[in-house]
Image (cartoon, rainbow, N blue to C red; front, side, top):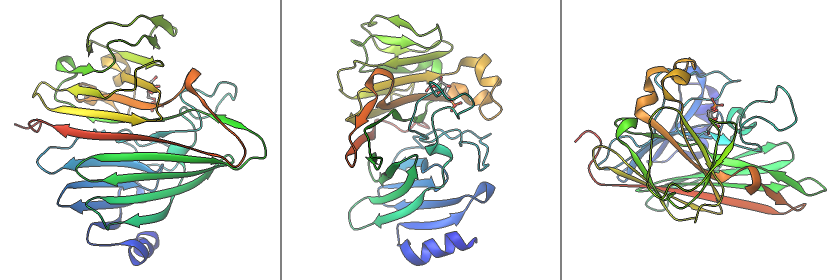
Length: 295
Ligand code: TA6
């Protein structure tokens, strides 16, 4: 066991949380409680697994995920911050920002309630960041950032959540029927509201900027429903790479049919500006109802 994992167990472990050394030598926290099982990495501050009692795994983690310090791990909930997608001006800057390859530190652990709340912290380009994952019957993730710069600063952020589904061809996504979107598969063409749940046939890469803020539901072929609700998260992104792009990604491949990304955050025109010394916080709550996927 690496010193980090041992030191973290000395400082924070409890019945519901243990630190271990996982693939790539990454330190991971393993949550085990009556309400759920979960896992997160200090690398990227990334939740990688969450399985509420009575259900199968809700998050999709690529079987071909790469665990290397300079790479994001494919799956779970990568954090996009302080920009989303390619950097608007900095050539060579990593896609989706710096948070998901940053080594986060443990700020606090709270096991006093029904859930295990883990707060990680990082300083990223003048932003003091705290990421809290509350592992319980729901999975609640909160990103709080404080502007430590002497002038106002703006950022984009998103919980780039990968959800496990039985088959992408049989899934429908509700809650976005009345929102137009930017079609990233077609030169950011603006698309009107579809007036019906989203169904995926091939590559889909949609940014919704003016959604009504209500819950988004992913209904699987098994009738399992994953419900995602945001607070202070005005944008939603729906993504599946489709067969061709998936097979061009060494850490994705065949798994594309068993995953869909539904991401809450604040991106593009929804970017957030924070005054010096001020803080912004956004939250995503994920819940599951209906039969587990294996039934
Ligand atoms: O969230 C959708 C998206 O921006 C897609 O355009 C695709 O690039 C995806 O993120 C995955 O990005 P990544 O950098 O993790 O390979």
